[in-house]
Length: 201
Image (tube, rainbow, N blue to C red; front, side, top):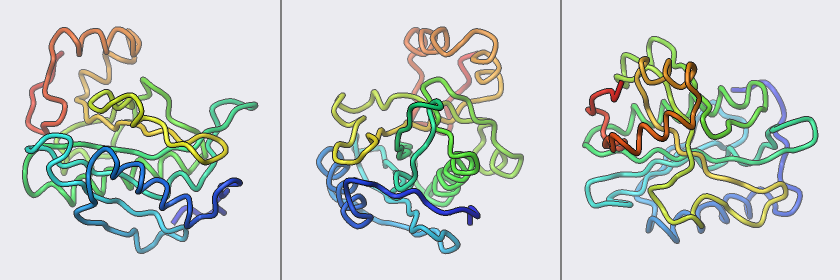
């Protein structure tokens, strides 16, 4: 799928790494309800779903296996990442799975980590399916602080919240910076779990 070799964890084996991620997520979100494996992936990338978590009306989707790769923050620093996307509403599995797999591929093409405030513009077919134009990378503040970091791997594994946003919101981040955008999110308090929400800009 990606055309390169995975750089695997140096502290945990691949199986241990996956089990560590699943154990960590289940500690906060409960048991996995369902999982999907990317058939064309050479390194076992999958997406799992936690139904009714963190709220009864919300299902949380999460990648498992992205963290097999070391991702660059800078020439001197690397990190591992997994993606999470909580959404409300029924019948959304296919769209969210496709979204998380697209972002994973986007990340792995260059092996560059996505940092807080990073905006990923989506291709037209993804926009048509999702109803949003981009994804904003954020800290998963909808959970306890301990959820954001998974211990045991070297380098460290962090969880990135993939927040679907509109073109106007993505443009605002580009023009004003992620700090201003997050201040605006706090002021407006939109339902970021809903794929039917209105843009705040």
